Amino acid sequence: MNYNKLKAKIVEAVPEIMELKFGCEVITKKWSFQYPEVIITCEIGGSNPREFYVSNRNETLYFDDIDEILGRPITLEDVFLAVQRGKNRPIIDNLRISWIKQLVIKWDMGKNLSEQSKPTIEFLYNLLVKE
Image: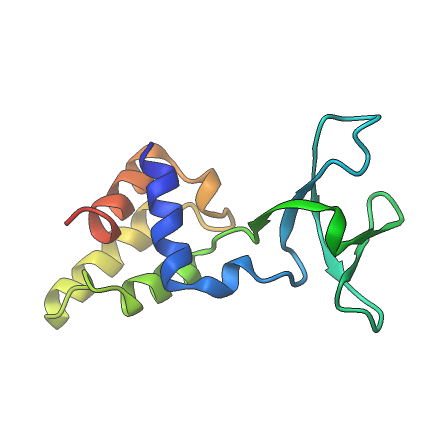
């Protein structure tokens, strides 16, 4: 699936997406008696960096309870950083202006990468992933 390859390429260029910070989503089976797995958004708080507050459950999640780190939602800023840091970035200024215009027109503002349309995902895939 192009989305997964695109996400991996962006995360490779912008690794801070995967840092356990405010807004980072993780999967846990801590509450598996209620749900098979739960995707939660972490809020870092307190003095222990291995402790995360889960506001919608009013509970604490510990690092050892995390089964998978999904990272925070990928934003338009992350896409720009990935293009800037990537080896496939346009070198000529006219090309750069052209893809920026296309991306701004295609990107549904206020939504993250996972909520973008298929044509937008394909455009980014061709820009960042395709050799």
